[in-house]
Amino acid sequence: MTRAVDLVVCAYGASPWLRRCLETLAPQAGEGVALVVATSTPSAHIESAARDFGARYLVNPRREGIAADWNFAYRSARAPLVTLCHQDDEYAPDYARSMARLFDAAPDVLFAACDHTETTAQGERALSPVLRVKRLLIRRAFAGAAVRRGPAIRRRLLSWGNPVSCPGVMLHKALVPDFEFDGAFSSNMDWDAWDRLAARDGSLAYVDRPLVAHRVHPGSATSALIADSTRAAEDLAMLRRYWPRPLAALIFQAYRQAYRSNG
Image (tube, rainbow, N blue to C red):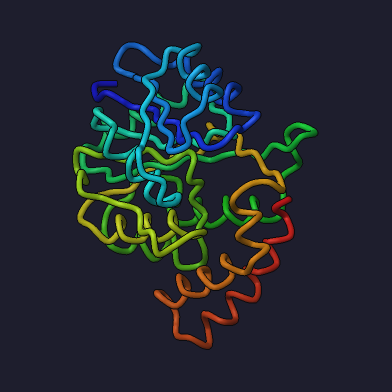
């Protein structure tokens, strides 16, 4: 691993899982890996957690939504490689180094993703139909390779949905320092982001091993967005980037069946 990494935990409110997230990331700090906590809702709960795990603590003075929080976290990162870690999730002990090695092997990688598992209050849950489909899509796109180049990867990876697990993505900030998440989206900021990044010159990479345990719970932002139909509208808008409207509508009907698995 030759490039430095910032693991930036985007903290908000009073997540009961923040300390567990930091507990999985803190042992990875050192030797080029830095741990950061960024928030727009400063509190003793978040600040003490950051301090206890040796993380740099940053406060965004403006509360303007999730996109603004993620953009603040991304801008604040000092390292050329950045992961915006989700406060509810857990990370494998070798997450940072396993991901960073992809950028050493292919310096033009714009972002790298990894496989993930899902966990609930009862522990790791059985492989859901949605996760099976996501794995099928992403493995089909990379076809056994760790790195894929060329414009075709964008369509292969993202045209049938978003199989990329946002908490596990490592961004090559040194190549895309101007990148920002689009605040016009609420649910699909990540799908839109990967779509726009994949359209640039460069490669995409993937670790076909679960390096993140994504926590699924009814109080998550995703669950709220599903409940008020925000996600449905944004999913359809993204599918229309790739398909004629009638075909996008058909694919969307299948996509909607996935919503029930989040809760």
